[in-house]
Length: 176
Image 1 (spheres, rainbow, N blue to C red):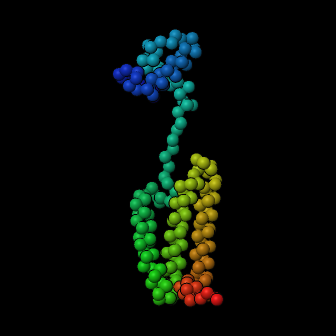
Image 2 (cartoon, rainbow, N blue to C red; image 1 turned 90 degrees about the vertical axis):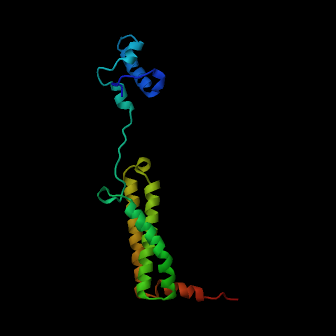
């Protein structure tokens, strides 16, 4: 940045003017005179003062993007699943079966997993919590999703299932 020549007036490029001021200030501390010539002349070497003051930004792929692919596919899958839930849940409740209960279990867990993953990715950022806490949060989310799916499968195959449970709740009458 400081090696570039200023074009136009100093007011047209305030960042460059500030960089030149920093370079000139460094030159003045070494016994050289602080003048406009120092501000307008290109720096002969990279100033040490600017090297530590400029923050480097790292652009890394977002978690979950396989091979740096587009996120459009995942977004479309999330929308398709949300749309499918509008049909899977009512049909699964109207016609109880193990296939319907399994479809409801898988689609509901996928829906909640993707939603919570977006929340964890957005709010448990490495810049705020370091690198360990976000990894633990994502790992905990995977564990919770797997346990939820396992629990629903167990409930479907060893008990009355999701549709049977909902029907039983709806059939319960209040005691007077």
